[in-house]
Amino acid sequence: MKRSNQKGVALIFALIFILVLSVTAASLMFLSQSETWSSMNYRLMTESRYGAEAGVHAAANYMMNSYTLPGGAGDPLSAYKLTVSPVTLAAGGSPIALGVTMNGISANYPVGTVLTNFNTASQGSLTGGNNTVNYSVSAELMSMRQVIQCGNSQPLTAQLWKLTSHGDITGTRNAEVEVSSLLEVHVTPCYNYAGFATGNGCASIQFNGGGTIDSYNSSNMTLSGGSPVTQNYEGNLGSNGNVNTSNGTTIDGTFSSPDTGVGAAAEVPASMP
Image 1: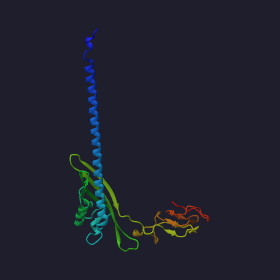
Image 2: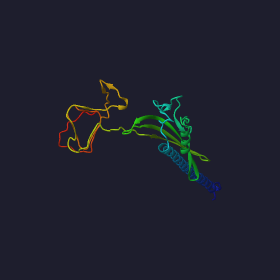
Image 3: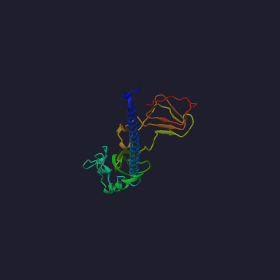
């Protein structure tokens, strides 16, 4: 006996299966497309970052090799206010900066040729695949001071610059990355130790009395009773051997030695904050 009410069921199931397969195929297509766009975005961001880093390196290369530090007749330190950070012009109080306007800071420097030369050296582009990556750099002077170099009567101008660089890709798919870096002239003291013994034997450096080893700033000399006002740090001792101190000796600093063993001489610990 035939059941006429079941006619067409196979067609309905076939349509349902086609619908399910169509939805699955569409989902796979969208997933594949999203992965493609994600990979492209990552590539564009990476290329933009490389461009931004290229700008930082270009600016640093100019500052280290072509830039003339202030302090001469054409660029006196009196034109700058050195007691603030960032450094500003003595007249007007505007921050010192080079390069393009970035993060609300415009180019501002007493010597016009420095502005021009910095822009020429630090603004440019490079090719990444099928894209052109443009980079632009701004440099802000965070601090500046003059110090006397060891064994040299000529002062050294020590600066700290903050370099900020943008890497940009324009087109149908845009990308922009900003990186920043600090460029500093490091200043080290002429004498890293209050005392140093070159001997490598026992008690190569020895204090018999209850003395104090400390430091003072010779560039800002202040006296108390005819003696320098000392600082309770940087009174460092060094030796190729070991140190022997008596009770009551105070070392306002550190002791450094390559000798990791214990010598034959009795060592009395000093007071070291």
